[in-house]
Length: 69
Image 1 (cartoon, rainbow, N blue to C red):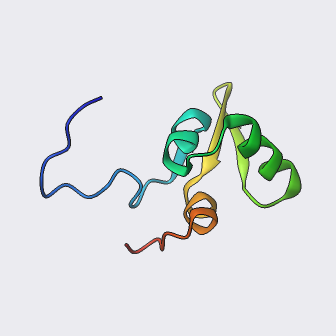
Image 2: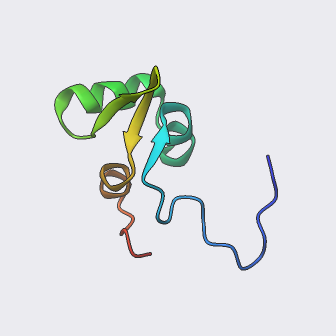
C-alpha cells in the first residue's frame, strides 16, 4: 500500500466513486454486505466499464463522514 504524504488529505475526501473493494476497506464491511446495502437502497451502486462502483457521497453518508471533511 502506498504511503500517504503527511499533509495529504485522506483518500476518501472528494472522491466521486470507489470500487467495491475500496469501499469495503474504507467502511470495514464486506463486499457482500455492501451489495446488500445497495439492494436495500441504503448505498448507491452502479456499473462502470464492467466494474461495480460505489457512489462516493452515499458511502460517506453511510459511514458518517461529511463530504467537506
